[in-house]
Each structure stands twice: as C-alpha cells, then as structure tokens.
Image 1: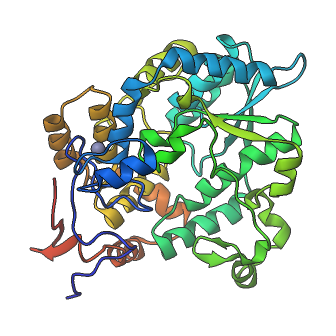
Image 2 (image 1 turned 90 degrees about the vertical axis):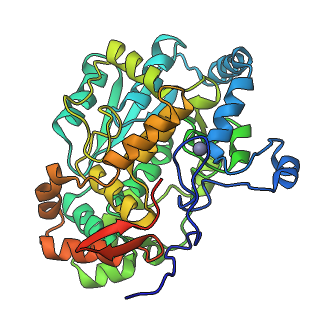
Length: 401
Ligand SMILES: [Zn+2]
C-alpha cells in the first residue's frame, strides 16, 4: 500500500470552505483558505478574510458591496472607445453555452456593439451542445466562427493528456485560450470580451480589481519546446507523423503583435453583476438556449458544461485527482448565489459527486482509442494517496464533506 503522500502539490490536510462546499484541494491556490492571516491579507488585497472561506465566497461577498451602476457606466465608456461604424468591434469567445451567449447577445442588443463570436470546436459535440451552438446565430442573431482543429492531431493530444496527466481537456483548454487573441489579430478587433469573471470560481483576488484579464496572453519562444498533453511538441512530432506546421492552432499570438495592435481582454463580469442562473434565463429567452432534458451525470444540474462529451471526463478526472467534482462546483456556485443552502449542497455533493459518467464512456474510449482496462489503470494511477483509500474492493474518499 502506498503511503499517505499527496500528489500535485495539494495540501496534505483536506479542509472545506465554511460557506460553500469547496475544498482546499483546488489546485494552483485558486481557492485560498485564509485561517488566521486576516491582517496580512487585508493589507495585501484590501479585502478581509475570515477563517476557511474560499476566495470565490469572499468575492461573492465583495460583489454585494460593488456599485454596479458605476460599473455599468465604465462599461459604456469602454465600449464607446471601441465601437466602430463598420465591421466587428468586439470578439466574444463563446461555446454557445449560457454565459457566453448572454454576453454576446447583451453586447449586441443592449449596448449596440457588433460582436463576432469565436468557438473552438468541442472534442465531440453533444446533441444539446450542437443545438445551443446553432441557436446562438439562428435565434440569437449573432455572427460566429467555428474553429475546428485537425481531428487526428487533436485526438492524439487529448489521448496524451489523458494518459500522462489524467487531464483530457487540456488541449481543448489551450486551444480555446489561444484562439481569441489569434482571431482578434487577424480580424483587427482590438477588444476581446469574455463573460463571467474567473473570480466566480475562485482566483487570485487581486485580479478582480481590474476588468482586464492579465493572464489571458502567453508567449512561446520555441514551439517545439512547449508541452501539450504532458509531452514536448518535438517529441510528439518524433513519435508521430505530424509536422510542426500542424501545431499552428495551439501556438499563441506573439505578445509583440498583441501589443502592436493594442489588443485588450476584458470580462463582462467585472461590469455586470454575474449570476449563472440569470444568464440561463436570459439565454433561454433570447438565444434559444435549452437545458438538457435530464440531469448531468456527476451533478444535479441540467445546463452547465453540456456541450462536449469529453467535458464529463474532465470533471471526473478532476474528482479523481483532487477529490471534488462537478456537484461540488455546481453546488458551491449556487450556495454563493443563494439558490440553495449549504445543507442542501452537502447532500447533493454526497449523492452525485462520485457518479461515473457512463453515458459517454464508450464515446470517450473510442475517441482516444484506449480500452476500459487501460482507462481504469490511468484513473487509479492518478488517485492521490492522501485522498483515497481502497477498502472492501472499492475506492473511497478518506474525507468527504
Ligand atoms: Zn466557499
């Protein structure tokens, strides 16, 4: 039996936010538990922290104090700076999901912009995902470019990312991040507007003081040296028959071009009080957005992250690696937005967080060409020993909320 060490640099001791149901195992210190450090952090951030409150909950508290009328004025000022007589004046990265559909639609019909939405194609569209994606232009009246990368390469990268990192969504996330600035540069649209602020999910609280996303650009000196799916591009090329040119969709726009064209990335959630449920109602009414007819496996919700069949495995591998899954994320968000109580949230997490995404299991295995046995081996290899124990022929979390 392996010892009780923790993988991925996770804290050894599992703790939960006292407001929502999120644990301190969320990586990259995105969730910051502040027990006892109030003074220091207050000085650094201007925000007071109480014991074991995650940064997303702290931000939710902050949102109550923000003067949203002032923020909207700022938005109008920003938009008037970029509004053009001809052509597109704002680029909105969009999946056709409720949040980005809301963002694009409100920018066009309330604020008089002419947005172009850009979609990095899902690995495998779900039926409802394709319907919602099509509705954004057909019913919402929004222009869109669907950018579909080479499926052979993208599948290979997804396979590597699953095998090496248990992170099958990584190549998709990279592509999605790269494509906005790339298209903005090509189409001469200097304003990129994302929907919700990452603070809704917990980020560095300092990032919330500006509407601009600081980390949305990244630069690459030598493409061969970057890692995709846990492997250097040059090694992927050596082991497969790909050419360096084929990696174009994953190569970020050089920072020099971004600066030259003065491209800026903002998020609408800084200017408008974000509420995912309200986005859902708005998108249903205005862009033809529909929820799924049934509950999402791994959670109780019906309308979040439902576009891509691989997304189910993104959430599931997250649960394996960090001990919290989709129900935890959904419930935490709904507790913060006062839709459910913490008690209800805890029950939902216990009921659904560990549920296996059987619905798309076959599709996923076929997509990355592996068999069930290998799938489970990779999954079990990525369980951090400080989170999991194997008893009575079953893997169990050592500590659950
Ligand atoms: Zn919290």
